[in-house]
Image (cartoon, rainbow, N blue to C red; front, side, top):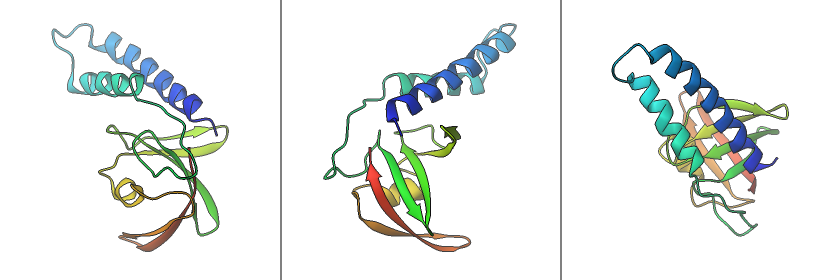
Length: 133
């Protein structure tokens, strides 16, 4: 999975949504709160500092993390804010989380090969970090 391509895809989606919202808000004298939030999200993705992570690097904002949960592989993109999006890249779902979300918080500081337990309303889940990109 290519992290830069995933981020470009999300940026493109946000820009399309911004164009639609701006057209809808053009009659209003001030932008709607939803439009302002979309603009902040687009700006954050545009200036998200990207770097390549090594095997020894830990999960941090701007990490694309491959997880294993009950034998399934999951992809999670950690961003500083504006999480909650679930998208798909090359047929694989990618969940966007922040360090303030339960999953994001549980992953921070961990590296490839580490496992962690996350308590949810439906019970505990045991994740293993396959790799950090």
